[in-house]
Every structure is written in C-alpha cells, then in structure tokens.
Image (cartoon, rainbow, N blue to C red; front, top):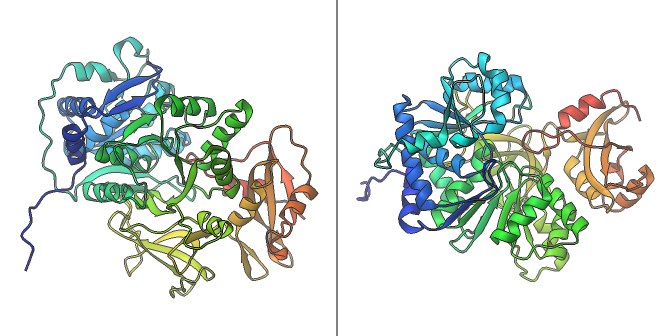
Length: 537
C-alpha cells in the first residue's frame, strides 16, 4: 500500500520560487567587474532568472541542452544557476583555472551549446573557440557599456534581459531530471562529469541547512569563498535561498585577505566557507594589519585538511569557530561535517582531538571503511581502510562514461583512506595514492603536514613518499616558510619531535617558495612527486 501524499517534484526552481514568496527582500550582495558593490534581492534574482529563461528559449535552448558558465561568484552567476536548471536545461559550471587542453576536452565532452562568461575570460575563450565543436555563442555577463571588443560571437547578458518580461512559469520537471553538471579536477586522466539531478540537489540543500550541519537560518549572512564552479559552491546558492540567509558573493577576489576582511566587516558576515589557502591569506592579512573579525562567528573549511594551527588562530585570536568538512564533487559535495563539539565531560584537549577530524556523516550519507579484501573494518578510531559511501546525492555513474562509479554492492569508493570512531567521527588519513608506505606500514602525509604547519614560521607544508632501498618509501617534507623566516631542517624536525611516532619522522626537509596547487586549491602531490622523483636521502 502506498502513502496518500501529493506527488510534488523536488526541483531547483521550487527553491527560488519559495525564496521569492517568503524572503523577497533579503539581500544578495556581489563584487563585480562593472560595480564594486552590487545589491539585489532574492525577489529580483527570481524575476531576472525568469527573464533569462525566456531569453534562452528564444536562443533555441531546449530540454537537456548543456549551457556552460565560465564565471566568478556574483548575482548574475546565481541567476544563470536557477534559469538554466529551472527551464529544463543543464547548467554546466566550468573551472577557468584548468589547463587549456582540459577546458577544450570538457566543453566538447559536455557538448555545450552556449557559454555564459565573465568579461575577464574573453581572451581565454578567444584562444579556445576554434576548438570548441558545439558552442554556438557566448553570453557576456555584463551590461552594454562594459561589453568587450572580440572576435567571438557574443551577446550582452543585460541586453538579453532588458528585451524580456518576467511572465514565465517554471515547468514542472520530473525531479530525477538532470539539473547541473560539474567535472572533477582530473588529476589522474581526463576530468569526469558528475551529473546532478534536481532531486539530488534539493535533498543535498536540505541536508546542508540542517542544524548539525551548516545550521543556516534567516539571521545569517553567508560568504561562500568557494567558487561557484567548484561543486555548486558547496550548494550555498541553494541553501541560503532556501532559508532566507543574506548572500555575499566575492567575485574574483577569492584569495585577497584585505578584500575578504572588508566584505566581512561591511556586510556583517556571520559564516564563511572556503579552502585552507583562503584562510591562510585572510589570517596573514589580519596579522599584518593588526585587525580582527567582529561579526564572523564560524567558518567552514573543506577541499583539504585544515591544520589545527589555523583553527586555533581563528578561535583564540578572533573568536571564530572553525568547522571541518569533507566531501567530493561526486557527493554534491557534502560528505561529513564537524559540528561544534560539546564538552560532555571532555577536557579542552580532548575536544580539540575531535575538532581536527573531518566530522560525522549527515543524514543522507552512509559510510564504511574496508580493507584490501573489501572487508568492513571496525569503527574504533584506530583501524583504517578505503572509505566508501552511498546516498541520494552521491553519483552512481559518470556522465557519458562506460563504467559504473559504484562497486557491485552499490558503494562509491572515494579514493580516501580513513578511520571511523565509535561516535562516527571520520578522519581522513590520506588519499589512497598519497599515503606513504614505509617498511610495510602506512604513514599519513596529512598528519605530518598538520604538525609541520603548526610551527609558527611555516606557511605551508606537504609530505610525499620518496623511494628508499630498505624501507620502500620514506617521507620527504616540503616546506614554504613564512615571509622573512629563517628556518632550518633541524628547526622543523626538532619542533615535530614528540608530536609524531619516531619512525614517522621525515628523512629530510626541503624549502621552496611555493607549492603547486590544483584549480580548487589542493596541493598537487602528483606534481611534487614528479619534481622530486630523483631526490635521494
């Protein structure tokens, strides 16, 4: 016997329709190229999104067409998010930081029909255009006064909207229809497309807004420093609209500590989200300027493990609670979240031991860790294994890819090595490909890096395995010192002594001016292994 409830589709447009009805005057603030500070509202975003959908229809965009965006975080990008998905097409967010060959592959593999682009990316597209096989034209996300001269077939975003009214009804789409497409960073071969559905995105949005996850409400002001081309900006443009939180979009200034601080203070930001490199830049600015944060209450750090030193500096000097999160493009991306750790009789140090973990899975994510024989390992915080997940917003297949993304039992292998403790706190100990295998035992590169970065003169650190005739591999620590610091190998090793097992101690320390990062801010271990492949201890 089935339940007798309404058959009501969970769609992207339902989120925007709700925000327009309930929170029409709540602000969306953007830093843009044509205005230093643009102010709009959810009501206006909804009206303009309907106009944009009508304009796209006139351009011949139909159901399931892929429409790309090559843009930073601002109100126009939010409008494109809702308009493209809401009309039944697929919003394909493209990462402009990728190499040219990767961009060409992604545009062609997705078979994008039109490309929304910021003015800043016109020169890049001019270089790629003759290799993009399906693209009909480019919609430049600006007004007529700021349209660039270009050889491309371009249309002006604002002119398209001015030609339309907002008399448009969002179609009642099946919730299992595809809504958006995002490609992985492709660190091991060509990028792979993750095709989200309306249903998966709405469920992910409701999950993210839960009190024990992002805990968002109408009293919040949220600054997503994570780019909108990276896993839907962790779903923030959807979740803020769903709960009526003010949304502040930083435009291209994603790693400028001074601009981020100014935005946070003037707009009274209460919550911000980003990768560790963003927070390193902000903290460096706060140190140099002797300023603090007066309204920010919490940050969410994902994309890479957050060193405890960063968390403590935010907490102890600025009163900002740092929440660890973990996820993947394939998971929409939320996989785990470390909510505020209650005292529950724990000492301060015991609380910190929990805070540095990647957190617990929210409802909608099931986890397990398995050994090399695919046998489940105990949740005791000590046993570790390959981390597998499943749930309603986790990919089952990659877009236009023959092989399943799941194993035969319906689990997705994340490629991470992790532990799970008796309270369901998950800790990533390494990527499967990054773990250092020494003498038959595994050494966590992440743990080595976190200890090293706690040194007051270390800005960044990365640990990789170097071939060793006796032990198979031994760790090499690669360090970026803080400006002006005079660090030595012995200084770093002495600092680490007693904080890690003796046999984990790096064989050597080398100093570099900077570490290579992926387009999403992660350290490129593959590039480091190539750079130091001939290194000998």
